[in-house]
Length: 78
Image 1 (cartoon, rainbow, N blue to C red):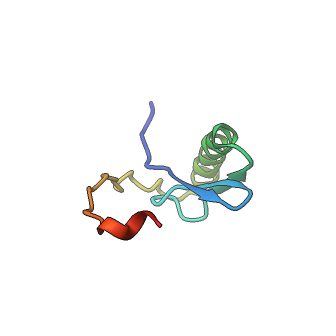
Image 2: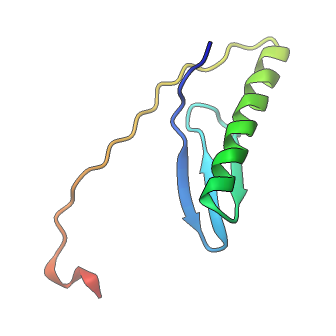
């Protein structure tokens, strides 16, 4: 069985960071986006295993993301 969790990737000064809003404490950082994705996937699986081992309920994936268009002022490209 699988579940889909929202993962947020952010560009950082020296690479990328990633976190899972529905899994507090589940984070990863890497020099590339591809590596950050690999690490957060592995980290999320380990995080879930730890939750189960500790006898806690796995948080349901409830976060969503949506891109929203925002009108920018003419001079915003500076």
